[in-house]
Image (cartoon, rainbow, N blue to C red; front, side, top):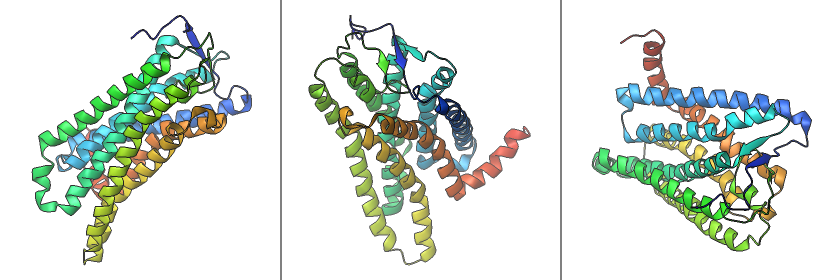
Length: 313
């Protein structure tokens, strides 16, 4: 695909909040702290899920995939943002912008699908407990994870090619912190409505279909849990799903706001803040939500961390 057409500059200028110089240092501090917590939190979850045999279950296999996604998601944008904040000219090469756009879109779409797969796992565990081992077998889990990753990257290549083929007539100032579809479409000197319609269609497929499946799964889960006579059983069942629902609400709420409305209708500053939230804050919160609210995860940390810190077998 010939993305570097004649209207493509050699580099883009990422404006961010450059018109508000007083925000640069607070933003740098917030990004650095968030990124550090994201790395530590997600690496810790991946390590514990891999090393603790009791967590070798479908639920924690998908949680490990989610941690990998979140780690890569933030690494795609935050290091470059931190470097740019310290420079007067905040630039990114054309190739870097293309790579950032493709990877960011791919990981975001993959997370949409993976969260739906995780809700199906909870549905089977609660509503079909006797068939759980048969349905959520090793190969089925691998295929579902692979489907999420492959579909996410395929969707990204398609949406990226549509976005990057729009003529920009030399425009190179991206009013954002990183290369994202709504911000890049605003550079176009042609009518973007046909492209926006196509991108909206693909966004509906990637966002609304998974979230609909999640809502259906949790509808059945709620019906099943309410039939449980034991209050302790109901509490445990809702506790198992509570962390996932918080993550779903945070991620889908902000992503739907950004991608299911025309770029022209989005307030530029509000759009930047929403992007920062789902691209940086949500990946930071995910490991905290899962580790602090999950009894099995907390117990696994107690078992595994001493072995790592003191090099015990």
